[in-house]
Amino acid sequence: MTPRHPKLRHFRPEEFRCWWPRMDPRLLERLDEFRHRLRVPVMISPANGALGRHLGMNSRSRHNVDMWGSVMAADVMLPRGPILGSHAMGEQVVRKAVETGFGGIGIYLDWQPYPGMHLDIRPLKPDGSPATWTRVGEDYVALIRAWEQPQENIT
Image 1 (spheres, rainbow, N blue to C red):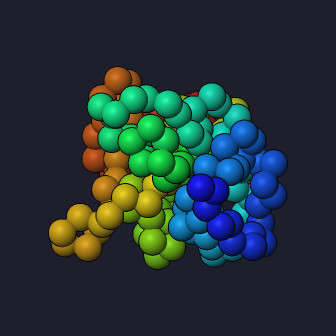
Image 2 (tube, rainbow, N blue to C red; image 1 turned 120 degrees about the vertical axis):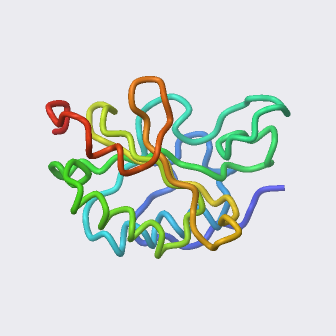
């Protein structure tokens, strides 16, 4: 069954490529609201796997349509300058993602061609906060570590 999609202000169905029919309406609504609140361009990452993935029943990734039945995560890029590159600006972006209701928020300063974010609609933690993280090398670590790294790869 195809989910009923909300009317979007800032995204077009073709931006979600072949995954449009499988996009969770709650994710679409939050992506659109995030873009509205942020007031800067937000684009879906061009990378394979940025939206849906077929990972079988053993992966709990919110990208995994086999487990969840719909795409519940999106990898996005913020192409306007170093918006994620500084601690203060990065925290503002994360705050907007939290206010929008995302349950999982990851920051990836090393993505190309622009730094990016993983945004998903998992349930919030028992304390009401989202899961947050960044990647340093091969390790997934606390979000604050995103801004402790050298910034030479930030565009």
